[in-house]
Amino acid sequence: MEDGQHIPLNFERLSEEEMRQTADRMFERFNARRTVRHFSAEPLPLDVVRQCIRAAGTAPSGAHKQPWHFCLVTDPDIKKRIRVAAEKEEYENYHRRMNEAWLDDLKPFGTDHIKPHLEDAPALIVVFRQSWTPDAAAASGKSQNYYVQESVGIASGMLLSALHECGIATLTHTPSPMGFLAEILKRPAHEKAFLLIPIGYPAEGCQVPDIQRKNWNELATEHGPESAH
Ligand code: IYR
Image (cartoon, rainbow, N blue to C red; front, side, top):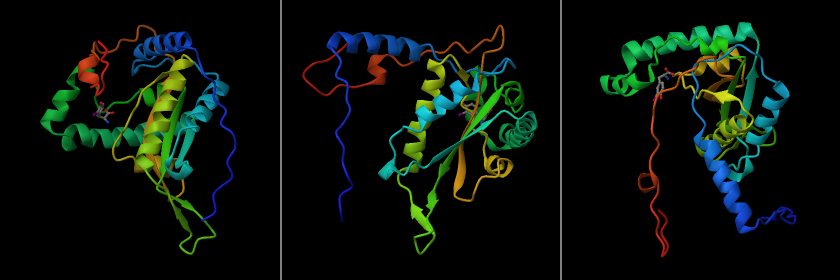
């Protein structure tokens, strides 16, 4: 097989001091991110949101297949249809599909099947994963994608971080099953909804659950001569 063309890497080397300052600032910023469930209806600068989606699209992916597609939804009618369909599925989840332990685990978050944020938030981003890519040159009409879950998961994480860095609050929402999203948004057969992310500014007086994050020893284990505390 012929190798693809390679170009020189463009890499900026930082001083250790710059690295430390960046790491500390970055951790503080990331640690301040909270999932928000109550949004103000105030519109967002969509050029900022588009740039965050572009940033997400720089994620690494299996064989650089970029197996993702992002729908940015601001149309109130479409948001309403998404809310109605999501609430129908969530009603089934909360009343029939989720077991006692799951419902118990969710109690601290106070969630239920009613999802006003799907209409209140000025925008929804729906992340789709592409299980394969249409390819007219292939006998099957398809070319395969690799590590799709991992690739789209990484891109979604980058999207959440990018939005947070730009002062935009997010809710990672996974109504299940999510088939209605491809239907409402008229996405092609090779795409399946992966995440539904309401975005916006937090509603005034917005409260969030009082949660703790893992400490270092729970979070990580080091396997080397030096250890950090
Ligand atoms: N998808 C449902 C239920 C839900 C499940 C988990 I796991 C959460 O962390 C939060 C919610 C919902 O969105 O209400």
